[in-house]
Length: 137
Image (cartoon, rainbow, N blue to C red; front, side):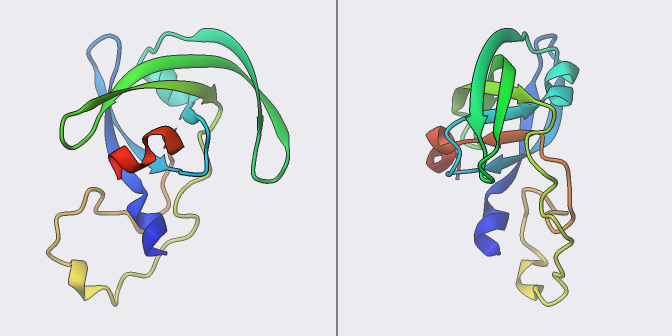
């Protein structure tokens, strides 16, 4: 459980018109690609490019992705990374899938947390794959 929680982070994304939006990101070392939700891509006015890609998911189903976008994200050390992302209706399911009971986790009470409500299910706007996993973790 703790390993999963460590791979969730808040990410500030910068849109093409100067606007910023916070989103919850999931670092996924099992993914060969990066994914962004269509809604997040639209709200930040990212330029979309036609690009047909067939992806296989964990349940062995094949899906077609028809658009990509390219943008930059910053890590907490201010290093910037360019992401070439596939645009999908949803980047992944809400994470965590169920609310986590943290009532016994007294040791985190005074810690500065990247996402203080990490234990509540929330939409994931961006899935960051293996290429950047260990650089951002």
